[in-house]
Length: 362
Image 1: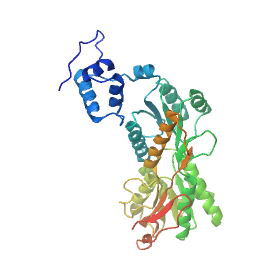
Image 2: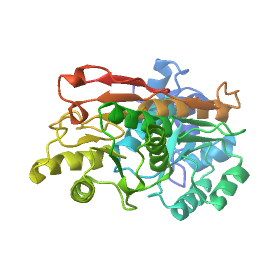
Image 3: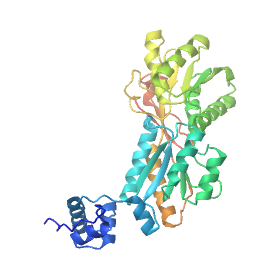
Image 4: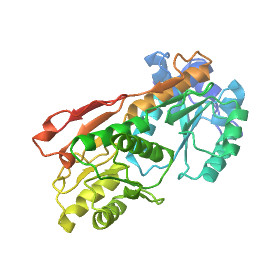
């Protein structure tokens, strides 16, 4: 049955109360139904949505926040949308929050502390109910702004046991350490570390690499190639060519899969067999890494689970509920493929990491 249309207000804007009268339900039921809250009966949801569609109702988030003293927006600051790593995390985060009636305001920082500060100031003007930020590396001004706002905040991708900090991530350093140990176990001693972007998480992987090589007594600082520009397939091919011509390492640990993918694409053009002459490994296990020839050994990171767990933690904080574990450290896995081992060797699982697991894929 089509809802009876009320007479239009002078402003021309349909109100929530008008939708409620047309649907024959209370305004709070309409509000909950349109936010997607599961507690509303399906029949009432259908009536509310039919009335809203018939009337052309568009919710006013600012008015809703003022009326209820509660926003339904969550501000999310991530470095990039061009990186699958953050896209996977964001999709899981948004999917979980939407189930509970919250929308996301996404800000892209481009790894720039000043841009992050400006974005945060802009988003705070919308009175967000919660905040999700990437890692812990930011300006003192931004830290102070988050602290003074009183808005519940969850950090993602990194972990900290500091009091009052809520975070979901994994040990970047332990994962870097385990991947380097795998390269050592394959017989390599001259192992290069090739990195771009050089954000805090990349440098934590570098620390894991250094720790493993120092323990093995074969750390060579000259085998590190650290580039500040954004990570890319093209840059990976260029870095691979330079490392092989200038340093001739036995293995290369690339800080991200796109760099390693570029290396594997460049190797045939340069006449360098992988892994016959040099083993190649990446990080994050991005799409396509398992389809390359040879397939790429990498660390599979729990980005979707990070998004889900961060959303659930933030929901508790926004509701004023206790959070059982303020710091959630998730497992990662070392996926051994052909780029660091011959096919018959890749069938054997590698040594498990402390916070993750290892698996082999032929």
